[in-house]
Length: 210
Image (cartoon, rainbow, N blue to C red; front, side, top):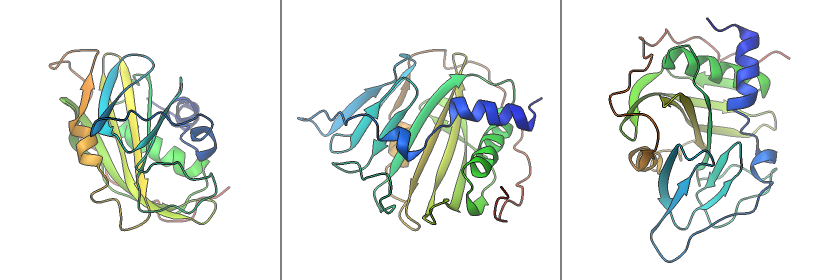
């Protein structure tokens, strides 16, 4: 069973997808083809994205921007997608419950307001079962965004994907292609994971209290 303090600590490991951290490293584009293949530092998975997208890979996070140059930290959120991909040791909670807890902890820690979270629904990341949820919010600098959070589990690790754009632009952002072109290097296709029924959606539309 996961408590609120556990969620906060786990979030610090699994979901530190802030702009400042994301923009510390330089970009790494692979030219000469229509796609580029990105492999995580732990060699647990790799995936393909358009060659024109900008990527950074650090020990704790893979950052992707759907354009040729990453904007500055304080830039407006535009139509090009951002993706943050993180991994950590698998939680003991089922995927749907864990995803909801991570999303709520993230919203609280980052002081998001006007938050709307959808119910976790079953999907796949590559050939592995996952859960995803829709997300809309306004960040602490008053920038509105929309996107999705996805959590998958395989080979003893949880992989979290957070993708977003400005409101109204996430559809067609390449999210479905990213899921399809995701290949696992650990575990097996028939690996059992905790995927219990998704919990009821909670009302988190009120501004987060400090």
